[in-house]
Picture (cartoon, rainbow, N blue to C red):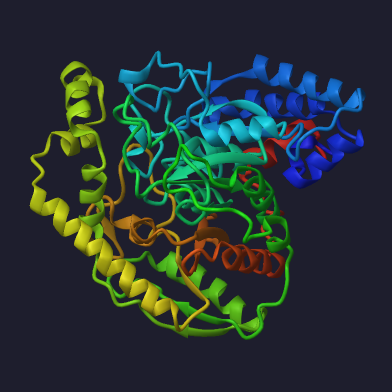
Length: 488
């Protein structure tokens, strides 16, 4: 039997239903992988091995009894620690929530549990997700499987590392400014931010009882981080669809998620490529790797590719003002009074800053400008390609590099390609584009027009078929396989 950790979620779910692999075998393999690699990577902040084993035994018993099981039956999954889990500690990387145990599941957790997924635990995040990296004041810093001295990205830091390291084929990320796409790019995985409203959120971002967890309402999306496009489509088929608890959720039925993940021709599609939005500083290695990946759309996939920029100015200042506007500043300031000495300095500075109504109003206007620029631009193109991030994975312990390609920048400038799509709500995915000369992953971002999640998935699946990435294994995994004699 092949190592269950090497199987995709699609393969594993089919094998469990067919009886060639049991849910217990898959779960035990995942827990063994976690035990071996967690001391290096720190992907999980709250593992739940007993719950996982009990769930797996229940699934096997149901299959043995002939009881129907869900689409994810027996598939190990990781839940980001900003997503509420009933009865499981949800710390959100903050000393203020160190003992918080939710009394209800997030909608997406309800749905994957009903589909038979096996929850391995909660994955690490920066404090309340207000960062694109993986360190916080409470837990060990999450490290990158490709180089543990580098960041795995964030805020879905542990989810990206867990998937890349083969601990699980599926993981939840949440994306308010890139937090699904960032760790996917830095960890050599696939990550998709669906359109605003495709996947409902509650209580996360929607429940005013929880300062810190209730912000980012008009920016946040929940999406999958996986090793394949088909696995992401399978997960989306379970978690997408409206719910009355989320006033932004939209009707389902216009997308056959599994069909979208089947590779097909893209001949004749009009594709724009923006290497830097016209203003962003970009690392030369990222430009090189992404440039090669973009050419695949023309040479292999038959697209008509043009270099073009959407024409909006840098909206970074407006983006962070929107974040502050949607943060419960009163609740967070009260939290700072009690826990501020132990909280993340950048978060405390943002919360305690004196924001003005004029700044918030200007941010709303800028969002309209960016949205209008992009929808007009997308009238001429079926897809828009960019780098996912402006830099490869960088050192641990910082918010971001202060210099990119010789230019002095803010420590959030490396997120230039992800944040505008949270302002517009468009679907966007990061696919593995290749590697730098020193072996670090680089992501290519595929952006669709309004509600064109299907187009993004189809393009990602076509690129995956043309330039497969599943065979690339992080060094920590390769060493573990060699030590254990595991057959991939």
